Length: 349
Image 1 (spheres, rainbow, N blue to C red):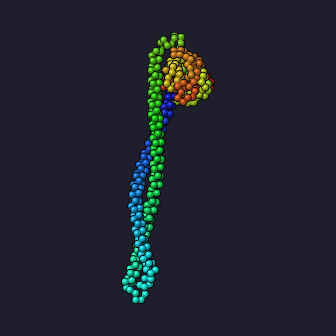
Image 2: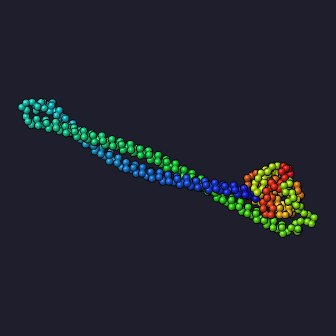
Image 3: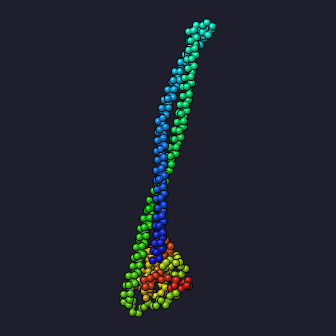
């Protein structure tokens, strides 16, 4: 029973750990989902800004092309006027127009050309200023576009990292969920085994009590008063033991002799879940001793054995932790007893 009880405790603890880990992973997954949702929203905003910025670039490029064309036309006209003025100067007309008594028409022509040149130059400068501003705006748009594209790339990397974390959490969550279900199933099976053993020992005690003095015991055979040996019973095996409630466990190599602690009759000798090869001795007065995890049983149900007689070989059958040894338990009136109060303090068998 102790092995099953300890296993139940371990499984319950493992189940609680799995449940706690599952809750933690669910909380982490929820946080990642929230971050991923925010990241996607941020990505959509960046994509929208990218689209708006790209949409403005063709207009800026068209305006710059128009300004360059206008500047080229103004430059051609300005060059023509300059050539005309230069021609007047070559022919002496300009000097004539500027000399005393010159014809007023020449003066007016000269003034007109000067005004026209100045206007053309001012318009050319204005176009140049506008073109410079457009080029500056275009560069700013290009820089903004490059920054947005870099930001979008970083955002995509962040989303991919979050998606990787999400996949990892989902994988861990599925694994923990499987472990939780396994622990739940093992816990249910162990609880069932514990209940079966308790019911079995209760029925066994009732049956033996009913059949007391019948065919199981020959007229010349008797149990002897085991209660008088309380605190003086020899240990079933040599060596120290450790508490494994409600019994004790003797760590031993496989194959060591296991001896009866008192005269009694074998009431059970077979495999039992949680105990492996289990042998139960009845000693009368509803007192039973249990010997579990044996490698081999050397007595059969119904056999009478004497105190100190070898009844089994130690082992690890049915062990839930893989340790080799002997599990020993004492029951009286359907209740477990503390073996320390029954066994001798001397380390020997």
